[in-house]
Length: 135
Image (cartoon, rainbow, N blue to C red):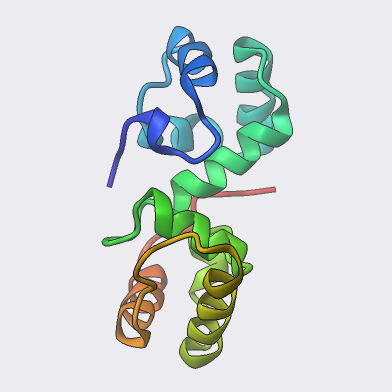
């Protein structure tokens, strides 16, 4: 899935404009350009956005490849300790669902947390997607 770059949590109008000026308008383009250290460094230099923020945004863009994971659920997954598709594929469904519920109870990130069945679907899909992020 690909979304407008501003749909990533933390990319407000100012950062979205900086990214658009260097040709990054969607999460797909961001992921393609920031999937490895060299790409992140180049994008950070061109956009004048800190490399650490580019990495965070790229990790979120990676999670957005999953069906049913939008901006809110990507933030929830990250808060529960999952920051990439590769990191999701080896998770235990029950443990991750529990972690998601605990995080959401504390931080109220989403109105309706995903069910265990939904988390299981995400994990299964993560196993079929090629890894994108390298460090």
